[in-house]
Amino acid sequence: MQVVFEIIGMGAKKYGGFERYILEEARQLKERGYKLVVVFDTQPLADRYIEDLLHVGASYYVIPYQNKLRFTSAIFKLMRKYRPEVVHSNFSSNIFLVQIMACLMHVPVRISTEHCLPVLSTCKRRFLYTFLSILTNYILPVSAQSAQAVQKGLWLNKSKVKTLYLGVNDFAYEKSEMKKKYGLPMDKLLIMNVAYHHPVKGVDVLLRAFALLLKYPGVKDVVLCQIGGGQTGHDTSALKSLARSLGIEDRVIWMGLQNNVPEILSCGDIYCQPSRSEGIGLAIMEASLARLPVVATRVGGIPEVAVDKVNAYLVESEDADGLAGSMYMLYKDKAQRERMGYHGRLQALDKFCLSNQVTKLIECFYKI
Image (cartoon, rainbow, N blue to C red; front, top):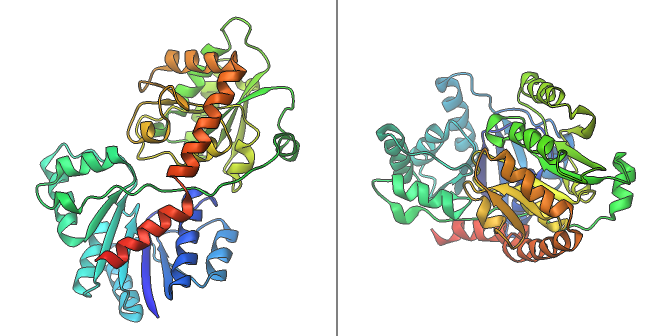
């Protein structure tokens, strides 16, 4: 049986959109007679995710990065055991070690997915990405904006850069049932946000924007529902402290990390993504499937999933006033919320279908 390696340099703290993407890949590979082997650098915390991977015939390993020698040795042994046909790296700070080992092991298909919006403004960064383009058959940024940034920074092999969007599963949940299930207020308009508590996600900007929204005339019965957590407790504590200082702590519901984000999004009325940088917004895709109009920042790949004046209002990064004003326009206009939500769902179904996007990834394996 032919083997595909997925090297994931990110501990799965939840069972979210990316984890479902990997699960769909495992399913499709099994149907084609391949086996997926997933290598994490941290033990995933979502037990059901691991159970589902094993159920569809995948295997998984955890190889912590302690030092280069131990990590390289462990990867080498694993590659020698399975002799993979494909090595695909995601989120890995050890991407170069992984792909060098894949070259030395004569792995025929070597692919790296770029999930973030890279900044290739220095010679060192440009050299590293050009070296990566030599090691791999393809670099697959998750948005056209990210692909443009990679191509601009490369000295060679620009044609190896191909945009490949991620995708999400369709869903449909009844709003009042989900509100009851998660204990969310039935009589409030809910503004939703899904983000890790890292500065790049701009949750602090969202809190300031929400505080400004509450000062608009006639705004009442509105609550901000934040889904996510921090890599450290300090990140979350700082955001909660900011909410208190803004006097909005009683209007913010902190949901923490959740495995069933689509269910919770189905409770909402507006979705807000105030990122300072973003490769692509999986949460925006899911919010669109839930028919939520979007307010977001015009950064990275966000405009490719949140189209200004179609399913979203876009503002510049750090613009709390702009976010507040856009949320207010949607707050007071239910018909506009419904129109934007309708168009957002159509786009998500057409452009970001999970099974279709995973099929495109697997087709990359066969093209080489």
